[in-house]
Length: 273
Image (tube, rainbow, N blue to C red):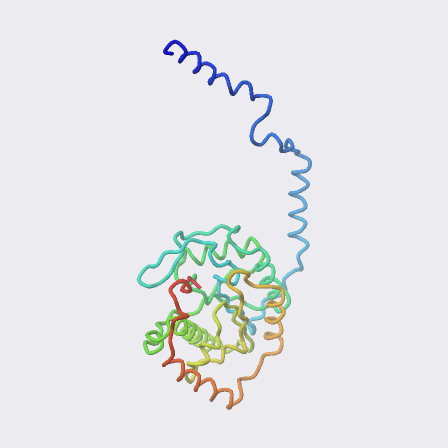
């Protein structure tokens, strides 16, 4: 049996040669075609150039942009939690991580209204995160972000009851403070996967009513054409504040929710935003 071992080893070594005629793993693919490749590049450039030209910036109109769940599908980027704040595991993201359709819808809003984009997302917290978002916007011919909302702390009395509601209410206050510093703004819309009905439920004097001036996106689908149409409508025909009876209802709702269970506010929902 010992004398057969070298023979078996030689036979196994020779096996790949017997399969040589079957080709490699990617041999079924057609060979590179320089002409077609060049045509594809030209088509991509043509598609980019065929986009409608953006109008001059209208500083009286503002889009408050969230990132996660609006242009970046939930789960697209690995996250880590630092001091209770969820941030990307890396400080840069790839354009391919984002929803091309959502970015197109965002561009459509800007193209039809001339609105300025202001970052309200947690992605505004560092220069690297903001630069990463701007690189993606620039690649899609969307004006880069030059301004962002301030960063506040959540109200403790809401935080202890429902962190998600506290997060949303904080974002509304941040937007309100930015608006007070920019009186030239007469129309605005918030694109967010947070439901601003939560923020309105805890609204204090001086904080704007947000639900009627927001578009609530599906965090996995992101911004759709229908969402963009609604955003354009809000910017074109700015809504009025809710009537007093609606305001009273929301205040009552907030008081009730302070005593309600918060089982729906699990940690899996806390993302970058």
